[in-house]
Image (cartoon, rainbow, N blue to C red):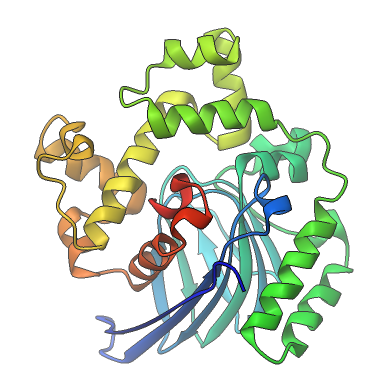
Length: 301
């Protein structure tokens, strides 16, 4: 089965010293889903009540298979983990809390996938979450039951791939051309020159800003900062050094590095190296193992 990886994490939680464990598995999307889905994942938490940081990320489609919890966003608003939750693109870290062991199956949405799913409403759900049944109806509970009845995680991945393929079967309005240009710009323009991006897209700066805010959740300059910061955080979480690297030198100084990484992950470089957030460490390390089966925008951040 292509792109399947497994990670097992144990760490002492500071709140009451209880032993916590995260099991996290990833799978790359099948070729037809690459424009829409960044990766599939199966997440399991066993341990005492916990409140964990989740770094700024792309939109997510999440099916709750066990337990319950809450999402808390940068503006202080919160919502429950619905049976099936759509989490919009996040511009800053958020908190996820649970009082009990939990299992979640889900997939990340590319900007094109998010736009295809949400249409004109996409910008309304940045740094927010909604009950996916409000869009797809109670039929999604059938998907939840299929996943619960699956004999193993590999079977769940097969069910998830098929469900996503059905959801996106008629998605002919996704802005593939625009998002592919922006993705290339994020990956290969070391200076992240906005004039160059505007020229590549053929859009005026104002129209370019509207489009990136609609599909990515933020304007080009902040989007570039987010990608640079989470790439740096990914390296630090993996135990790598940023010293004298092109990425490391793109920050003005150490205080700039610390400030940017904390803004988008909620953690300092020291905390990332120490694995202070179970969820952040698990996500970054295991997503990195997807390697060439996904875009570097996914595996390196």
